[in-house]
Length: 148
Ligand SMILES: [Fe+2]
Ligand SMILES: [Fe+2]
Image 1 (cartoon, helix red, strand yellow):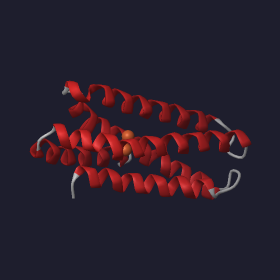
Image 2 (tube, protein in one colour):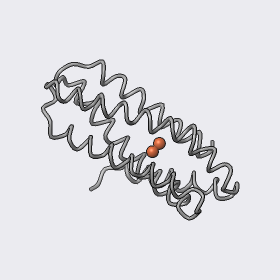
Image 3 (tube, helix red, strand yellow):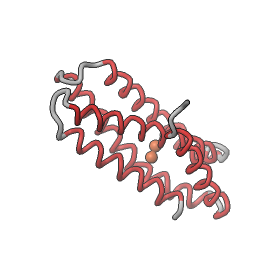
Image 4 (cartoon, protein in one colour):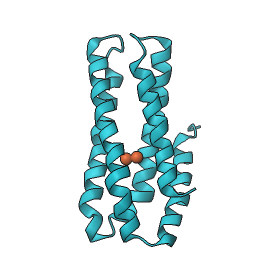
């Protein structure tokens, strides 16, 4: 396992959850459960990426612009999630906003896979890349464990 495969695995989970949510209707129990699963997963993934991945990239001038861009996209997605949490799930507005989130997030994940990964592979050494996976896993686990 390496950090790139690890992130791709999470992206696969997010893609599958988004697809399932789009196939649900109204404020069904199924939509509620899948959406809260998606939120927990998305937020933990973004936090772990920022901690393990983007924080390291930001130390290097040649990757600063891309890092800032990607982190800004996390914020946009989190704002859409917040909006969804305040919207009636059975309304057309909810589905429209969720579609927007799914579209934005698909673009974001594809950009990470196609543009960010090659940039990291080009600019960071193997040791740093190995360390990223450890930091990512630790943070993700912490984000997903329920607070007492
Ligand atoms: Fe991301
Ligand atoms: Fe990601």
